[in-house]
Image (cartoon, rainbow, N blue to C red):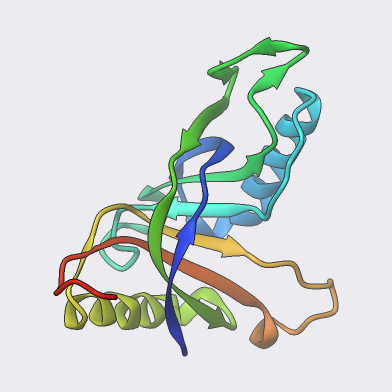
Length: 163
């Protein structure tokens, strides 16, 4: 797996927080998409799941995470909004992440995360935010072993000045 540093631009997102089983992710992604559509917002990117907790440490039904999608703006029916019912709205400022692609099922997902965390530590990055998984599109016939998920870890480089 290649790990790269990249900048994520400012973006607005619509999301729903959860304390539940990560196995319900597909239905939570569908729910966010429906809420975005029902509230006349426009999705402009791929769905994501973001979490601070160690997936191995928490009971299966006690995962703490949010599921969301980038959106064009915060306006619903022409009016600014900070929250629309269950749907939260927030702006993420530009930030740096270490990014790697996980291929296959989520059963060995922690191995991918551990590799990125190890890379961060070994290369003088401080981890400054939650792990975010970007669910890249695949057609319905794609075998699970071929599905790719981008894993992003927000960081600040703390090493010597680079040119």
